[in-house]
Amino acid sequence: MKKAANKEPVRLREKKLSSGNISLYLDYYKAGERQYEFLKLYLIAKPKNPLDKEANQANLELAQRIKAKRTEEALMGTFDLQAKSLSHTDFIKFYQAYITHYTKKDNRVLSATLKKFQAYLLERFDKEKLACKDLTQNLIIGFKDYLETHHTGEGPLTYFNRFRKVVKHGIRENLFPKNPLPENLKFKSGGMTKGVLSLEEIKLLSNTPCGSDTIKRAFLFACNTGLRFGDIRAQMAGYKQY
Image (cartoon, rainbow, N blue to C red; front, side, top):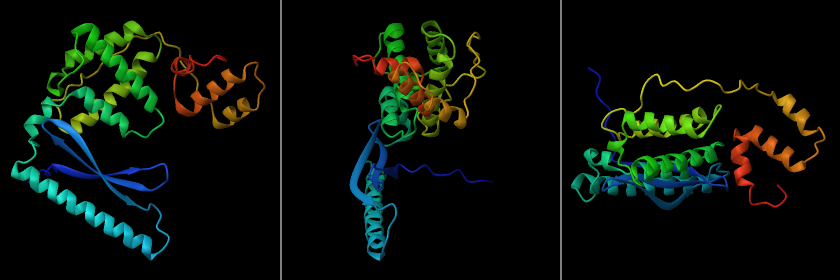
């Protein structure tokens, strides 16, 4: 019989920095809330000589020792890291932490989706917090209906797919007593079928004259990030030239 994998109460993770190097940090739950402990230990992403390799090895070993200490504290009961407490984690805080460590280009859409979910909670339930155990299928269906009420075309599906990505990550982290995602959700039709530009077509457009340089740059930015034009316009609303 296949053994079930033991879930580590403390995990050592890596975050790539803008400098190209790697920051080491610990990821664990304390009193039902997710915590990130940055160790101020760094790895050289591309060591060029034996000294760089030795420094990486020393920092990694130190990080492993700190992780071992935190794990021992968890097992001794110093930390409240019991799995039963995870369902009381605030889903909003979990979502915000997910965004903080999310590095893909659709980060802004992910953030916009969180704001829409917070508005939904406030409007429908007068809540600013939501325990993971209270994220039910009916609540998620209600959010889907809320998106369709406030957006048209492909907007509701775009936002919901980002929301579903975060929930699936929470499922992998054992935050929910049971899978809260409904199956076979169908969105209203009526959105336009959008063609996909090839790289050659985008290059051609970038070299094509346009009456508004701002609009042209916004369009090319959308092509490279996947952001909707409405989201870009909201970001640019404060600029006089727009």
